Length: 157
Ligand SMILES: [Fe+2]
Ligand SMILES: [Fe+2]
Image (cartoon, rainbow, N blue to C red; front, top):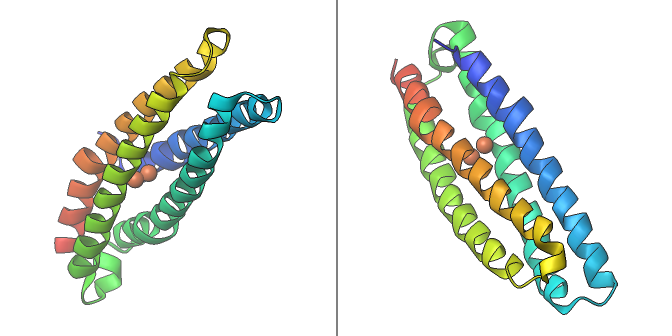
């Protein structure tokens, strides 16, 4: 069975990295089209800028807060070296992360919808957003269905 350390490695070093890079790449392509006067691309630009910011905040929060706490707790063999309130911290944090996941999914649906209005000659770009949304959903599932339940067991002691 994959360890928590390996799981977090996949979530951060593979998936966060892919999602960050791909969204930035798609943004650059859409921005280029917008700068060339494409109206549909222009509509997408502020949406993707907001998405880049929100996603970065979410990823940073996970990496610096919950994920590093999980790794420390696991290494110490006790919930955050016996720190009181570890389970409460977990519950509040996970509730926030799950609500951010819901917002992100809704946001991606919107961007995928908007990207459908791009001209046919840019269909690979629209397809890029669809693929990104699929990877994002898989990433969220892995966190919510595998990592969070494991973390809960860890913090519950
Ligand atoms: Fe994540
Ligand atoms: Fe997440």
